[in-house]
Image (spheres, rainbow, N blue to C red):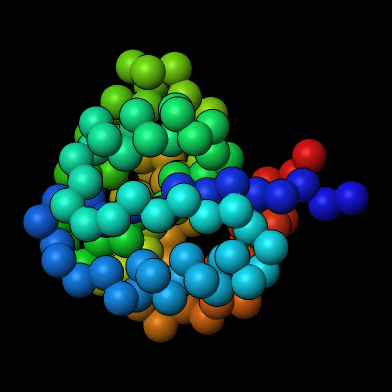
Length: 131
């Protein structure tokens, strides 16, 4: 039996556009994952605390504001401080090609720029999270 992946989808910062995050959440749910959506305007602290409370396998950030580097740096640091650095982090949204390697270098496992196919995300998550 395949493990049911639990993923937290979060919209950090002041970015008020969440249609993409909601569509991704539905696609992941349709693929059999358990999705917890935190809503708009989440702080890094709120995201990390929600991940702890919900005992998720993956933290997924949707960032359209261009602040993906500092937000991800802060998230990775806080996850380490709270003892959950083993949780996978993925990020999607407006991610310039030149930033993908930087994000991988800081520990972000999956980077999905706008336009990434749902099947690509789903396959990545299912292959990365095994029982």
